[in-house]
Image (cartoon, rainbow, N blue to C red; front, top):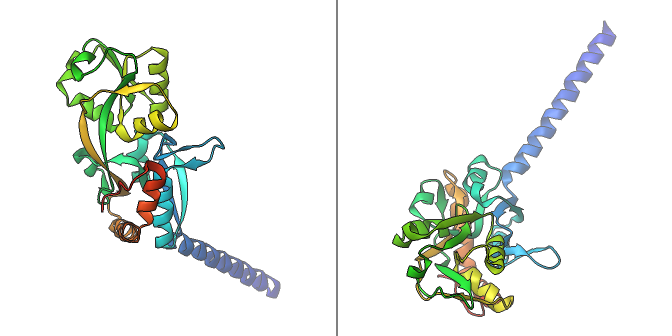
Amino acid sequence: MKRLAIMLFSLVAIFALAGCSGSSEGDDKEKGKELVIGIDDAFAPMGFRDEKNDIVGFDIDYAKAAAKKMGMEVKFQPIDWKTKESELSSGRIDLIWNGYTITDERKEKVLFTKPYLKNDQVVVTLADSKINKLADLEGKVVGLQGLSSAADALSANPINEKIKTVTEFKDNVLALSDLKSGRIDAVVIDEIVINYYMTKENEKFKVIDEALAPEEYGIGVKKGNEALLNKLQKALDEINADGTAADISKKWFGEDKVLK
């Protein structure tokens, strides 16, 4: 009987220790020391893989600087851009941060920081193309990234009704590759992205003069998590004010483009 009592006491002690261990782990998780950021890793110069396969870009440096102010570590999680809001709402990522355009539709799904960069959706073709204005897209095959703001901009323009086919791609790199090979006639794309390819990669493209839509980038936070939103915005305001953001912008764009 005495032996049984000792065994029961030992089991209770083991479970108690296990419970304490689990509680400590949970507390660490609640402290939120790591920010998991969902990105499209083929979206230069905002977030992309360099020749060493490292994830780099303006948004990558901007996020690291903000996280440092917040006293947090960052983990960049490449995701399918079509499922970005689902990834956020499920809790698999904490933020959508990679040239994420603020729209009224998206505001119904996520919380947004203040805008931090301006952008335009533009049409790019090959340098020797006869497409010079939006009207020239009539009867043509146009490519764009699926479920992106490029798709929204094109669908909102009357020329959309006259385009022969709109082909969706997983990312802009694939769309531009098909443009170079002649499988499509034009690509609707972020001006910031195509400017990078034309200057840094020396690609032979041209951007037509008529832009489809102006837009602004923001960072998406899960609905209901105002605490994280406010903490992040405070950090962004600080690095914008102390010149850190300007330095990052000059590194990637050659000038300070960050909205204050």
